[in-house]
Length: 131
Image 1 (cartoon, one colour):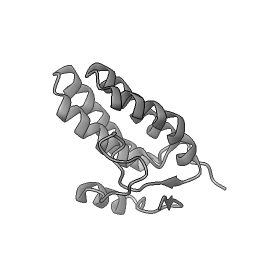
Image 2: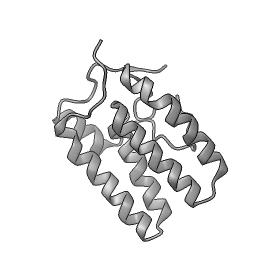
Image 3: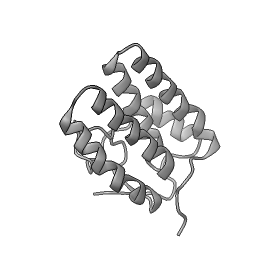
């Protein structure tokens, strides 16, 4: 069994762009935009333990910044559970990672991210969707 620690190089720039945009939005106190880009980063990185965990840690921080108790508690749980499920390749494909959606709900992948996955041959990989 292959364990999914690190993101393939061809995806890193897309993931990093979302994280950088999150940081800029956070610096501008534009919380809706910050959440939007964290959720996109989550979709890109959820298949890999380290980026998945990193994204949830940023979501936890943003939850604290906004004093959102539900988000803080939800992200604490996702931090515990997310990495192990990424490691073994069991993920709810397309899930945005925030508490506005159940952590086991599959969601439609945005068209531009789906195109990026197809272009980099990372659409399905060796991953099993949670059902």
